[in-house]
Amino acid sequence: MRPILSYTLTLLLTLLSGVAAAQGPTARLKSSPMLAGSETLTFDLSYSFGFIKGSVGTATLTTTPTRGGGCTTRLLLRTKNAVETFFPMRDTMQTWYGADRLPQRFYKGIDENKYRMRDEVTYRFTPKTAFTSARQYHEDGTLRESRDSRIDATSAAVLDLLSMVAYVRAIPEDELTAAKSGQSFIIPLGKELTEGRFTFIGYKMRKYKGKSVSTMEVSFDIGDPGFKKNQDTLRLYITRDTKRLPIFARAELAIGSVDCRLVSDK
Image: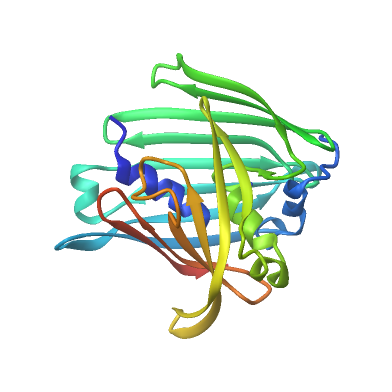
């Protein structure tokens, strides 16, 4: 059975990705600092439940330019300390973007203890529509589930688990802070089309590299059983400078909570 904690760790990190030009919200990815060049973000992950508290893993999110003006983002998640002994995790996610920074392909590989699975999604955009093809495979390579979708791309951004954070980092501060009624996005994965929404909460000072930094606090609504609730599922804190770094995130799980803290950027 797929563990709730490991799934949510992977999803949480991402909140901290030759097509026609899209007219809808997804086209905003082109202005994201996350996709502007090379970038490496390193995170520490901690888990808390009752008397159980401590660091459980690390993650690295890397952006690399590719041929033809495109780029790719890759997330590597690794457990450590006691968790590595009784439940080792080696999860990978990767998104490939075209020169217009629209997602072309998404890959997720799960390697958790004795559980292995992979997801793949391909994207094709027209000015008003996103066509997606999602496939989920068992460890032996046989197809587990699939879904081909035609999505209205004019009213909601069509993203994946990595491009979510790139998308939020791309929104200008004045527009993001005006999103108190929320902005919608859609993520195709397996046979599901997951609908989500993010809302600006306010400004908050947080510590990063020993200094107090002004951030924008954003709440995400994500309908997934791994979380404690569908509304205000997690909080993400983004710096107000040109880097728009996701320096902290917290999610309340069905059991316990997870913190994702940025420790370095380059």
